[in-house]
Structures are given as C-alpha cells and as structure tokens.
Length: 445
Image 1 (spheres, rainbow, N blue to C red):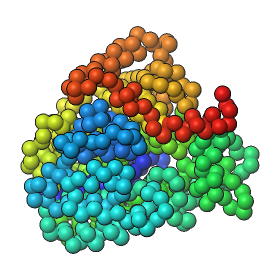
Image 2: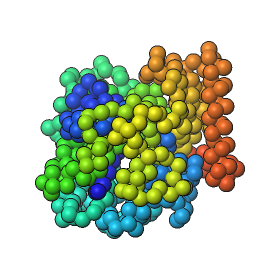
Image 3: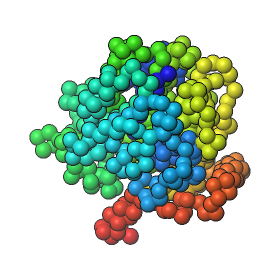
Image 4: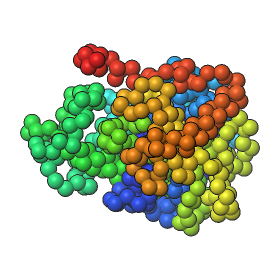
C-alpha cells in the first residue's frame, strides 16, 4: 500500500462543490469523492497552521503535543509520535513537497526527501500549485514502484488570493470596483485592511481603482480552490499512469478553513466558527475497501488521520496517539459514531476554546477578543448554522453545562500530559500582539 496525503491549505469544507457549495469549485475532488468516501463532518481540533499540521502528523491534540500557537516558542518533543517517521522505519520511501519545515523544523521529521519549491518565490504562501506539481509529479513518477508516502501541500487558497488571471472572474459577476459598494468598509478599520491595501490588494486594482466588493474577494478565494483542484487531478492521473491508483490510499484534507467577512473576520483563519474549523476529508483506496461514493455523517478529526494511515499500512498505532482509526467507518464496516463532541482551540490572534456538539457550539475566551465579542458565546447550530445569534444569555443553563464539559476535558488532558496550566494562558497569543500594537499606534484607546 502507498499513501498520498494532499493538504489544501486554508480550504473550508463548505466551499467545495462535493460538500454542497453553490459553485462547482472542485470537479476533480468531487469525482474522487464519488469513487471513494467523503466525511461530512471533519474538524480541526487546533488552528491555525502549525498546531493543525502538528496534530495531523502526531495524532495528538494540541493540548498534549503543546503546539497551540502559530509562530510560538514552544518546541515539539523529540519523543512525540510522528507517523511519517514510523512509515519510514517500516520501509516506506517518504517525501514531502512543502515548506512547513521553514516555519518549524520538526515538520521535516521522517522524510527521506523534503522538496521545497518556495525558495523560488518571495513569500512562503505565494508558491503556487503549478510550481508544487513541477516537483511532486517527477518525484511520484520516479518512485511510484516503491512503497511510498508522499505529502503534497498546496498553499493556493491562503492569502494572497491571486489565482491565474483567466480564473479571477470565474465565480463572479459584477463590478469589483463599484464605489457605491461598501461591503469591505469594516475591513479598513482593521490592520489586515491596512496591510493588504499596501500589498496584494494593489495587484487587484485596475486603473487606480480599488476593489470595493467583498464578494469579488470571495470569488478569488473560490478560484484558488478551483486552481488547486486541477493540480490534484494531475497527481491522480500520475497514479493511474503508473498503475498504482488502486493500492494507493489517497487522503485530501485541509489544515483549517477561512472566514470571508463573517463575524467581522475578513480573509483570515482566526475564530472558532464553522468556516474555520470544519474542513474537508475525502479518502479513496479501492484495494483497501474505501470506495463506492459513500458519505460518513459522523464527527471525525485531524487527530484521526495518523492512526488511520498506520492501521491501513498494517502497523501498530503508538499508545501516545490520541486519535482513532477511521478505517471501519471508511470501509462501511461500522456506522457507530466515534465522538459525541469536538473540542478545539486557537491561540494565535486570540486565545479561545470551543466545544461543538450535535446541537450546540460553545466558545470560551481566555483573553481579549479582537472583534468585540463577549467572553462566552453559544450557538444553536440546527436553527442557526451561520452562528449569527449568540444565545448565551437566553440559554445560560445549556452554556453552563457545556462550559463545565469543556473545562473538565481541559483538566483531564492537562493531567494526562503532566501539566498544570492551560497552554493558551501559559503561552499567550502570538500574531495577535501585532493587532494590539497597530491599535495603540493609532491611539484608538
């Protein structure tokens, strides 16, 4: 068995057409889902990038492995489980086409080959799918006859949203520069607006006219997803050409989503709302019984990816891994839910915990909120899927019960990890400090 793990960075599940999106953004991943299995409710238990990918590779929650922030000073223990290293130790040829190692060195663990094409571009995030495939596809063709694990990381849906010119209006009709359109007005009172006006928004302007329509920026995000989807197709075609498609476990996921103006969060991935923590998971492995176009309706998490891959490879799952193998669900051998609730956190722009159940989302802040939200939020998701109506005051008993459940889970996990203090409090936010500096410089308070 081979393994191809594809990460579509910053892609929210509800902007993929196979997840019901109104635009056909992912025709090739849609086809893969029809051939394999789609997990309808895949969640990130820690965001953004560095906590999320660390969780994917360790099979541990961020409260256990200790990486709760992006750009923090915490280091991953050398003893932490790491599934690429386990595969390598059991005879797999391992390769990453990514630049995560330039953020944190532990992302290179377990890879015999680490190919980083982003040295060719000025910013880590600006390496495009074509460049990634220019390195991933030759490697795949050369090593397809070996027992391989290939990790391919596409950045395209991350800011800056600058898809190829011919795709920029594929999902948009209207005038991006309409001076009467004020949908981006809230962005200009945030540091993101200040930074991006001086950066990638300049590349979107035409004839000195600045973009005014938030929906145009949404369309660019969708076009980036469409562009990455084409790159996924090229990878899958190489598997077919090499005759190894049937016995290759293909996993498509993302590290987190993106908010596109909802909740006052413009084109970034902070906030524990569904658009950020609900990610795609599409899996295909015909030889292993993962096929048929089925859908799994139950909660699953990033923490489950490592145990799933190891069990599929016939390898023991380390006891230190906290996730659960999804093989039974993916093969249709069971329909029993693995989780009643999802616990998730962020500690980069703001420090927050959340618990998500079938009915409710409860969000608990450990510090200041950059968008003037209260320290406790409660949403009834069946009636309010967009999380627009905070019910904390009117359903405080429900909120109190969920807060107790959340705090109890945190205490249990801290005890298990031999820690006494919540890492969100201990480590504090990282990038969020620049927001506060920006405000202070302008004497907003």
